[in-house]
Length: 107
Image (cartoon, rainbow, N blue to C red):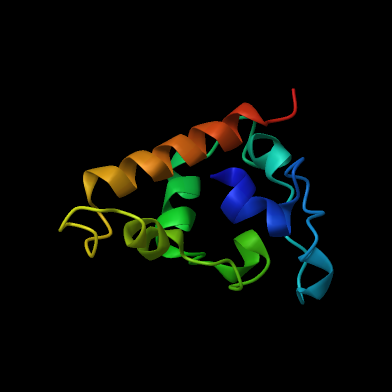
């Protein structure tokens, strides 16, 4: 999922150097330093919120250009709950993506 949805902006290395990064007004965040920028603790709740609903505070992410992935992840769901952003399948996809980003944190 990261490769399909995030790498175009954040790069395969998640450092903000994806092929579309140069076209954005504000460079994408370096996702490998999220824990470092949050006092040494990975901000899982924040990441899940950003993935589900977009960036609430422009200063925290740099820009409100970050796509909201909840509806997109719902559009690939086959069940009748696809229109609900909080369906179990969407929640699982978002949690898996958050865990993957957590695994990329610089040590």
